[in-house]
Each structure stands twice: as structure tokens, then as C-alpha cells.
Length: 336
Image (cartoon, rainbow, N blue to C red):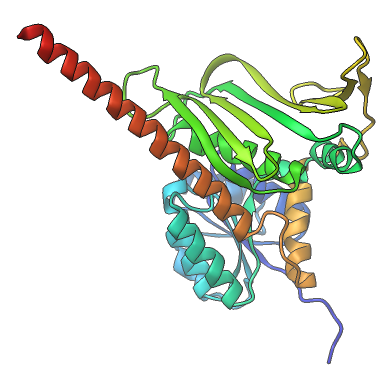
């Protein structure tokens, strides 16, 4: 039996705002075979930047090409379930941008399908590959901060191209997956969840979620599409110390503080911080394929993130319905 590693050939589906970054990274890593996009302008841009790369608007062409053994999906989230399922059924390894699906039952189907076919299914939870996040995970595991009691993650920015679902589905997968990864445990339950629409419709552009973890640690996650100043900040509070990770800073992204000493912040040196986390993520996908290993952000990771967001959304919509009913009741009383 040959010990040679298989050659991975990747097709990227979707070369738009984020997909073009995946195209660039897989091209630079020499794994890109094909780019598939229904938009002619996107294909023209790929042809101009990477003239030797084949492009097509037909996903079936990708599925039927036996040379292609891996598919990267960077399309709108509501299309993920159908496209991932087609790719897995065609025997392709799959990397899909977050979220893995928009319903937990769909995420579970994809997870189980990939496992049954012994295929790599990886979700684009990018921060699990960030050097600062991995260094913070090591600090927590070492016990330097003591027992982690509280986590706060704020991901606030302006977005002029809102999706068809709330900001929670766009940004919170990063927060939930990151916090769970750092703590080394899965979320136990959603304690509270609320959302606000600045435009008065059903698409919430500010959301706040409180999650309890198996150890009793509480995580508060805030996401926004309407903050004019970007803020990407993570705070962990332990029984001995606290840590702050600010991804908007060019230097000193990660600091650790002693709880009993004021002004005790110390900067944590980060190895290879100059390497783009997306490059590390793309490399991880290929290594998992060629070494037969499970991805760090695998189908199970994708499933529990979607389950938490699904529970939070039900709570948010339930609270909105209660408020609407209370308003209608008060209005009817005033008219009597």
C-alpha cells in the first residue's frame, strides 16, 4: 500500500465578499482547482486575477468532477444545508462558512452524513484558528486565571449589507464557538436572549445572549450591525485573574491581569500573529483531509453552535410576541 498522501484539489463555491478571500488563500496554498459562482462578474474577476483557474456557474459540474475531492462553500447561509448535503453525497470533503445550517436538525443531518461517509466536514469558525485565541486557551488550561466564572464577548460593527436573518446568525457563531473552544466545554443552556431592530422589522440588528456552560460559567454575548465604531473585545474573569483580547489592536492584542492588584496588566507575546488566521484555517482543512483527522471546527461543533442560536432566537421571538400581546391588551382596555 502506498504511503503517499493524496493530492487535495479544492473547488470554491461563491467568490463574493468573503468567498474571494477563500479563493485567494487556497490559490496561494496551491490547492485551488475550480471556482464556481453564478454571478458572471465574480467569475470575470477570478479569471482576471487567476487566469489558470477554471470557473463555472454550474455546481453540478463540480460535483461530477472526480478530480475535485474538496468543496469550500461560501454562499448565503440559507443555502448551506442543501449545498453541503449535495457535496457530501457526491463524496467530497466540505468546508462551509458559518453557520453550518440555519436549523439544528439540518446541522445534525450533515454531521451524521459526513461521519457515515468518513468525510471531513469543517465549519468556518475562523477564531478557533486565531493565534491569540489559541494562546488564551492555553492560559485558561494552565490555571493561571483560576476557575473561569464570567466571559463577555462584544462584536460590534456597522453593516450596510444586512442578511435576511438577524445579526446573531451572522456574528454570534464566532462568539459561541470561540468561547466554547477556550473553555473546553459545550454550552449547557441559554439563560436569556433579547434582540432589537433599529428599523422596526423582524431582522434584529442588535442581540444580547446569556449562556450558561457546563461548569457554571456565564457568557454574555453582544453583537451589532449598527455601531459606527468597530469593537471586537473578549473578556474572561477567573477566580485568580482576568484576560482581555482586543482584535482591533495591531499590537498587544492579549493582556492578562491579576484580580488583586491594580494596573497589573501584562502583554502576552503571540507567536506567528502576522499569519492570517484564514490561511491557518484553510491549511487545517487540507491537513485534516490528507491525515484523516477530524477538524477542530467539525460538524459537531457546528451543530451545537446552531442549537444555541436556535434556542436564543426562539426566546427572543417569544419575548417579542409577549410584548406585542401586552400592548394589544393594554390598547383594547383603553378603548373600553
